[in-house]
Image 1 (cartoon, helix red, strand yellow):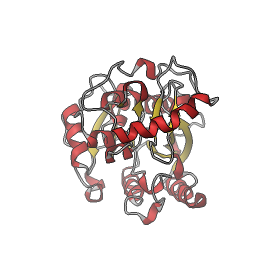
Image 2 (cartoon, one colour; image 1 turned 90 degrees about the vertical axis):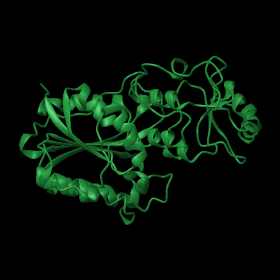
Image 3 (cartoon, one colour; image 1 turned 90 degrees about the horizontal axis):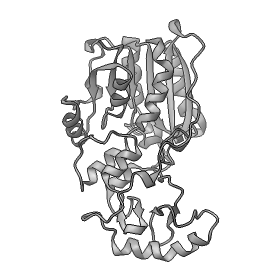
Image 4 (cartoon, one colour; image 1 turned 180 degrees about the vertical axis):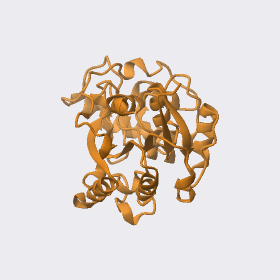
Length: 316
């Protein structure tokens, strides 16, 4: 018997779902309007999540204890134009608020890019916080980097746990930082992979800048893989501390937006990227597929979601 029920809004690849189910939860509704990602979701959970949240009738939803939502981040991301609520995707938070207002679940568990905190000089996050408080929730939020919580990825994200005021015990806290449980050396397959070769243009740009990187104090020696990203003629970023650069939805646009394992002159595979996000080994995906990279970049880091969930599961 499940310990609690939850809904999975903007469900994507199901990262929230995997974490919540690991904690004993049962998903009673899922929703996403991207057909490609819904196909992946169905392959893994045998459930059709395809729907338009603006057309979801909050009055007809099954009863649920937790609302999970990694609502669209592009309007608030530093990688985008940062137009926030002026973008129709930015208004998706108010769809979340609409569902919360009617159903009054015990917990709302939200995730977004860290840029949401500073967007519009802090006014965006103030609107979100005030809205949740007006709906009867105590709001706890924190920006957390995956590399500080056991996962080898430099990924800052905003996490919010809103607990209904009538059940709040004044004892919620976010999990403490922990050491890395594994590094890229444990993930990356030590070989070239057909279909994942870097373009000659990318390799030329990497060769243009790598010697300077190896002379810098950031270089960790030759025992760890060098990962190149943001590969351009004008610049190229490197790191070889066992931690991946942030995996973003831009990976799905092709070009040189997918990080490259310099030693093997190839891109990270989708399977490697999934592991960097904390997905289980048996998760089903399409390989050699740009849409899969985009889906991964838009997903959540599962172990962080699970560790935060552990901190509020007693409320359920």
